[in-house]
Image 1 (cartoon, rainbow, N blue to C red):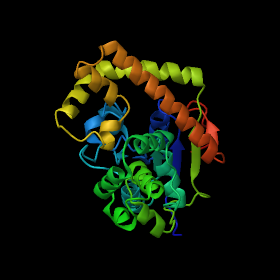
Image 2: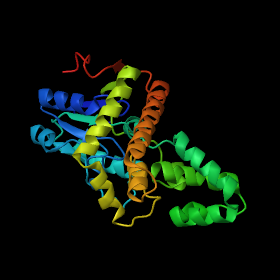
Image 3: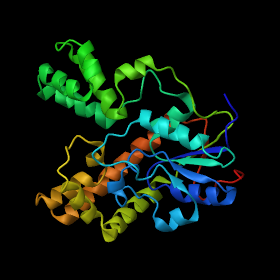
Image 4: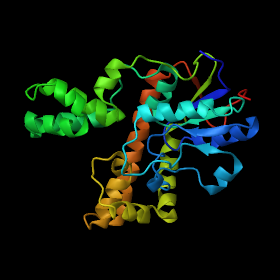
Length: 298
């Protein structure tokens, strides 16, 4: 592996203080902040995904934020291509990758795995689909999303069809590509600083609730209204971002606003718990800290 620039990886559940820590380190080191969150790539979702605002972007360079249209499906494969470009640009400038999408950070240091992790909500969704939809309908959906794998699988093979659907849904990459691509890391894990934030869970719940209500004050409802006006398919990742569904229900007259806010906050709490569990299981060798207690990195 070629000599890499100074790289810092910061993971952690939503609202754990990742972005503020990344900004502080980038300012101190003269580096750039690079997004590793699968939802903050979408330009239509600045508020609901808590993307860094103009003030933060004016202090240090922020890369790979809001550069993808909501009509597109971003993937870990595309992220790695984008990340490679960032790493090759100005090699002497430290790169601080930050985000809550563990799959992206893991891919940086291990490459594309032949056995991608499937988040529980996606797995549960397709298991439910298999109980309510005939296998032929599932194969037709796979043909729409991943024609390469659909051509390889018999329409009467529900187990393999479900696996292929889970993979393309979770990663945006065909199972065929996962099977054919050897893991080629972009970042030397032994040379990078790797931090996973683990805040107190009670404090995190309070921060999540407070932050979502701030999002509402900043225009989250109008952001969802504008997104719905585009009439995009519900299956797109941007349409499934946390908060979009509940607020969309309110805009359709299916829920009062306070109910929608409560559901969105609950969804965020549950997502943060899943993130924390994922990081504990897969990033056990990383420095565990809170955003306020990270020392010795510079």
